[in-house]
Length: 273
Length: 274
Image 1 (cartoon, rainbow over the protein chains, first blue to last red):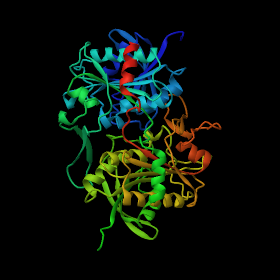
Image 2: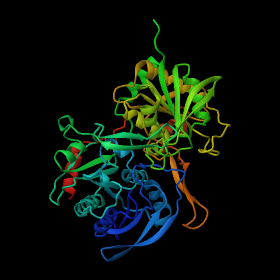
Image 3: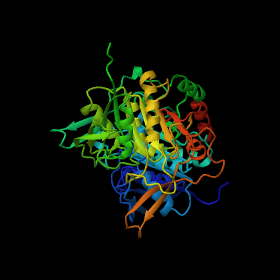
Image 4: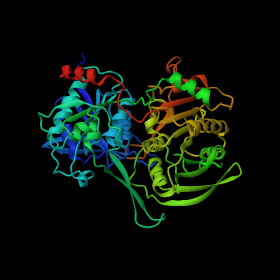
């Protein structure tokens, strides 16, 4: 049995000014000591990247969450860089758990490859720390980068606490390195949760916008595709979130080795090459 | 009967000026028509990120490798964004094969999701394109991952890129495989053995912070090849192949990050934990 309080590192990709981050901080503080270290600026879409252009500065600041003062750290970097700055410079000991979120907008299917929320959790997992990425579905795409105070994160914060508590209390299979949690926009505390797998249906399409020729600025955004639920396998995150409106919990791994017979593959390559 | 030449897209994360990119272009030109579309600047460790700082500007250029000239396009974007520009604006149609690399430095173990070389490959795989991601290990003592060290010889790595590219062009990717990830040790010759491996569960690079002053001074989180104790790398892993055995590693990857566990019994164990 572990003595003393649990140490939890909380981060996100929407930045230190995100009400989704604050909601998670408040809920998690009932489980242990929470250190909040988050990117100084909006970092959506940065995945697990470590761009060489990041400043890497760390600013200690005070945040007031519902009347309580928090000492928090704003880092000039991506979520994955923020995790490393935290582990190497800010926190005196290895935390028991890393939580990333609550994100403005769902992170399902292959979005997990470029989600900064998930990127922070993957970085923690690769340092051997159990990690959770939490996102709340948004209906209005204009809200994704908004950090709008209009969004109510209270239900998702309770789910965050619930799954964090499970991870702190018991051992999970080593292969389940990150729990990727997506909470529907209309969830209540009574909403059921299910273990799911990533949807391989391309749920999000890149959209390129350019006004003039190639010498003009060209921006890549994205939009969710219209989903035909009949084509979605029922055990996927997309089906669970969009069709049954349940909380989706997907165990993720860093081991992307293809699930094929490696010896067979090697002999095929040798025979035909 | 004249067969149309294969169309090959070549990209990387080190940028359009990388000697590793040119070495791959030279080797691939024997197999088909190569179009090079690469980031304008160094994009090492940008993963599959979509940076909002990218300008997306495309500049045409001419590249020379092995005495041949290639159409090149330099894009102000991350590797994953470069792939989207290539597929939506530059190429006339879907290529038969895409290659990302040859990278300055190995991409092994559980750090592959940080790599821009791999990020481009994930984006290509998502678009349903057969893809090879290729990297050359750098000598650990003198490794410089950023500055295009002209002393690095990519010819052996280029040999293996052509070897596996020929296979994919003729046979396609095996069922269940989205990407072939190839790591070439720095001492390799074209005669070096190769082996199919799995990803190591270890980090390939240990993170370290390089900071000159206090927290208000600029800092970079850098990676240095992790120290491997004897017996620490898993047998059959990519790290074991390149770091311990000095052979070429070929890892089949899949873009599905779902953990490979029985999901129903996992759900059961979580529910009993509440």
